[in-house]
Image 1 (tube, rainbow, N blue to C red):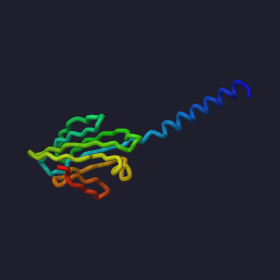
Image 2 (image 1 turned 90 degrees about the vertical axis):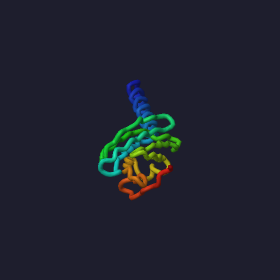
Image 3 (image 1 turned 120 degrees about the horizontal axis):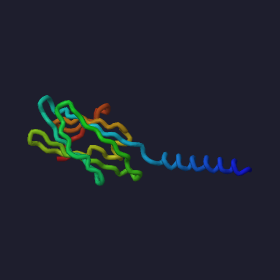
Image 4 (image 1 turned 60 degrees about the vertical axis):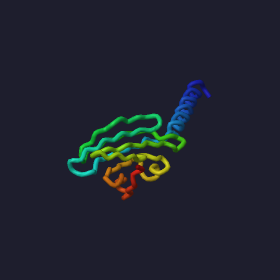
Length: 129
């Protein structure tokens, strides 16, 4: 082999290794939270994980916010949120990787008075508090 062929081969090999390494990273997950509490009811949402604080969001009825993240390779990603409206406070794990990864990469939650509901899966869960 001539030097140019060896160089081309090594570059292709390096490109293949780098591409394979990036394919091992989990794809991004997206979470959307909709205020479905009813007309005239504002919702305050504060979501965070062990490492990321999304911050407090103020949502009028029908409004939403969303955030994205790359789940852990250890499949232990967890985001929990507190929800406040009309003097009521509840909390809920809005993203649990072992629960949600098989269901959705685009997880859309409608927040209702009796608990959050995962859109398109007809899955409504109770509040933790």
